[in-house]
Image (tube, rainbow, N blue to C red; front, top):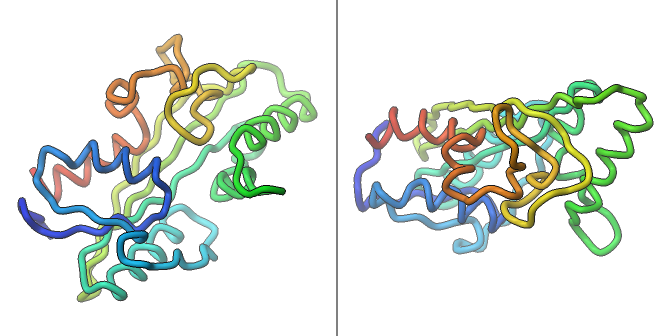
Length: 202
């Protein structure tokens, strides 16, 4: 299941932030990248209850539609005091009037924590599952996570999603305050990507 420089790989997402982050991590390997948007693909409905299940849906759909090897991720924030929520519904918490708004999602998470009465620190972890799917049906799974805590108020305007309220263990900055390269070295997606690179590119 190895890829070489010049091979084509479709990133099965329309999320520009994810595309930019994954492209930066894959740049040294010379793989030709495209995304769902480049192929006019709609994203399939995510009907599974696990990160791996939803990542598999997206990767397999893109591989079948294009005949290319496809890489999809499903990732999210699990907050201990909220029973692991928002979890696979991490992006759904951002939905509302006017479309997806992660400031709204972060406020919702904070309000839920306050209402829960849970004392600080509010333990949490970011999780990422990557599924690599081949048109012939082969696939591989790579998983990463990073522990930390939820902070309030929001800090930083870098990154995307819930980054401004997540402070990884051992650091004083949130993901929203970190340089992109520093974040990539320790992030859940970075960890899953390192496993993918070691197995398929290195």
